Image 1 (cartoon, rainbow, N blue to C red):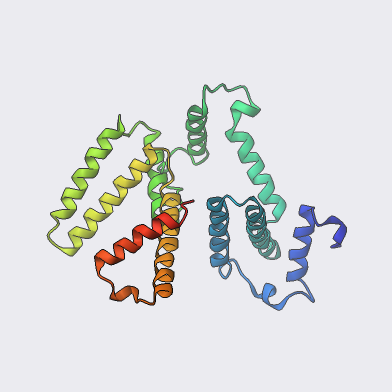
Image 2 (image 1 turned 60 degrees about the horizontal axis):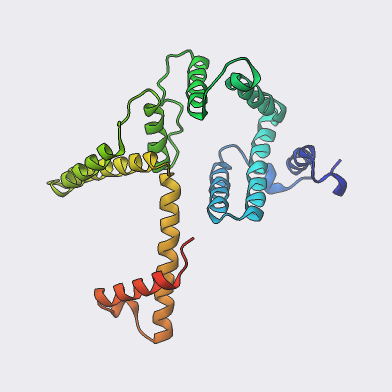
Length: 261
């Protein structure tokens, strides 16, 4: 039974979702499938990332709850189809965590986080029979920047990496030159892709997340450009009518006025 007295229990969430999907439940919830919920799952994941970017612990708690609901929702749909239940999901991840942390739950010794990560990857490969590529289980639906950083990181764990970041910076200059020299649209797209790929490599070497860095840059641009628009409204001018130099002056003004977070 669902009760106000046990709202902090995981079992209550499972019971609520089951009730929503069951007889006398919500018509919308009852119509949902794994496929129809794909976009909602992705959206909730991105909202968790936004909460992290905002450093809002209150919002993070709320968004993690929304994401957890999606997980339980999918497990309920699977249970109704006789595929698996939420307890199977929990058992599976618990077994995986125990198996991949022998340095915590076993006798294996590691010297640092880097070695622990190498061991984790080796155990993942062993689980798959050792035949699949290290890159095979990186989700191809990831945003391109995240996917690029993950496959580069995995390749680097084998030693396939630059010795120093200066080599990547030189490569960056090389890619810019090749983009400038591209003679047609197809070649430009190819070289631009190589340039982005190299930029992600720079981020990886600097210990940055390329996807997060670009999201934050997008937020800064949004705030500054909105400030420019508001300034123009207050001054009774049309932003589009200003010269490029005048627009740039407004941009610099916006940069000073809008706090970067």
